[in-house]
Image (tube, rainbow over all chains, first blue to last red; front, top):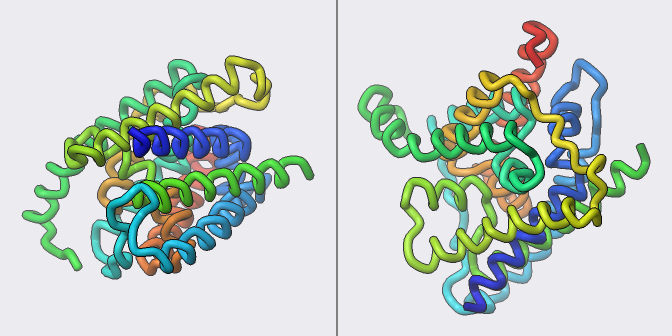
Length: 146
Length: 146
C-alpha cells in the first residue's frame, strides 16, 4: 500500500512540476524547438533543473543496495545504440514538433486540456498498444538490430 | 520573461524530485512512455502494473486539481494545442510508436538517462531534439500547417 501511495505522490509531483514549468503549454515547447523563429529557452531550465536534481538521486542510489520500500534498484543502463533507438527517437521528435506534447505533459494536461488533449492521448495510446506488433514486423522485414 | 525561466527551473527541480522519489522509494525509473506503454500493452504486471496505475492517477489528478481549484490560474494552464484532428492524431501516433520503439521519452531518456550519463539516453535525447526541431521547421515554416 505504501508503494502505491509513494507512486501516486511521485506522479502528482511530476504533474505539478510539468504544469508549473510550462511544459503542458505546447506553445512553449514548440517555441523551444523553433530555432528559426522566436526561440524560447525555458525548456533548457526545466531539463537542467530536473537533470541536476536527479543526478543527486543517482549518487544516493549508488550507495544503496535496495530501494527504501524494498526491492532492487535499477541496474546499469543498457549501452546499445540500435535501429529502434534512433528510428523511434526520430519518430517521437517528429510528433513532438508537430503537436508540442510528449507523453508526460500529455497525461498531465488530460484533466484540463479539453477534447484536443483527449484526442492526442487516444492516438498516442493506440500507437503504444500497436508497437509490439510493429516491432515484430520490423524484425522480419528490417532485421538490423544492434 | 524573467519569471518564465524561474518557473521553468522550479518546475524542473520538482520533476527531478519526483523522479528521485520514484527511484529511491520504489526502485523504478520514472519514464512516462514506459509507464503508460507498460499499462496499455500489458507488459507491466503485478506490483509494477499497480504502481504504474497509481503514478498515472497522481499525474492526471494533481494538475487537474491545481487548475480546477484556481491555485494555478486558468490562463497559466493553457495548452495551446492544435484543434486540427489530423495533426493531433498523426502527432499522437508518432509520439506513441516512437517512444515505445526507442524505449523512452523526455522523462526516461532525458531526465533519468542524462542524469546518469547513459549513452542511450544522451543519443536518444540528441536525436529527438534534432527530429523535433526539424519537424517543427518543416510543418511551421515550409508547409505552414502549425
